[in-house]
Image 1 (spheres, rainbow, N blue to C red):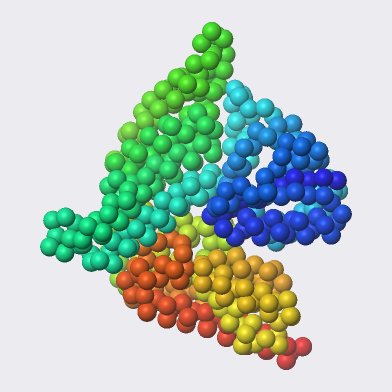
Image 2 (image 1 turned 60 degrees about the vertical axis):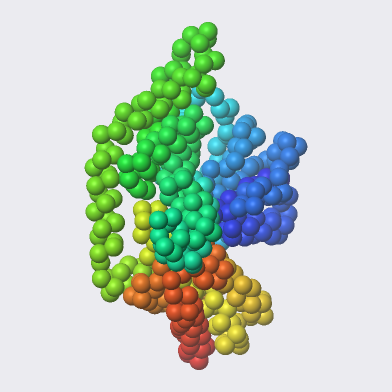
Length: 463
């Protein structure tokens, strides 16, 4: 049997490559020929050729965002699973493919599909995957823009303002390219909306989604308006494909260039226009509420965000916490970024420390993996914990959550502000309290290491 596979995760950093390695290993163990294409943050790796796809019995998509260049697989039997399934259960996945005990479908040629086909495709992806399509494409704007804003703050809070006596042209440059007026931050909501629309309704939904997202940003509806704009534009595109499916052939060629974009834009904006102002008021109330809560109440939110980051190590719960922190950031509140990043760094650092302090309770392979976790944790790659969580889920996850929750609480209690959504130790210097933040991450890691280590020690004595 021959399988071609594509792995992809929203951030394109860890799960993408871990899934690829796991699938290769399991395929080899089961005498299955496999070639895996990775669609990660650094582009397409090990790209599948037309010959690879033609000779394959199945195409496996282990992805949490839409697969790029999907039209290559027209006529092939497709199996779609979350990327975490390939990471954690690759062996069972390969065995089920061999036995035929798994759901598959044949990819049909695109074009003017009927409404039922388009809705089935959208349903198969699910709301989560549509959101992740927007989130993954929005993330680089938040990361780069946030870091640029953080660099400008390093010169002084008002150093980027030409009217300020503290004005510094370098600070002004970084604030301009990263900020929300004309820089990266000004495009966050539009990108979110456009790629959600593209995921739901295809390429014809992209432009209406982009413009609707720009309007959502203009009316200050925040991420809620951007998400709504994306879904409305996507489903309007699906509806238009149905309505214009039987127009005369003489004008059929105008659909892609004129009819879809023009009527898609008009209908999308007509639907959204009455709801933008109420959403803007709701977002304003939310931002005021987040800005007005006390340190202890913020600490509780930080505790929850930190705990969610450590629950499934890059899975849906982890991504939901990240989406919340990034959405608050996009709406002008950067407080919870520090809780998110600490919550993602503590588990791998804590596990790494535990394999050092309590080495005799780990196998040789686990001790080697523990050393790698020092680097992964420092780079804010929570997925390094997954091999440990698979072999010992309860103790590893609970221990990780305890340390992450403590760190998440403390980041908010001490009002630590992080202006970037990724980068680990490399972006700690742009926080408002870098030394304290480092100490909080170290404390959470020590707590995780001690809880897991003594838990293992107690279990060993009991047995």
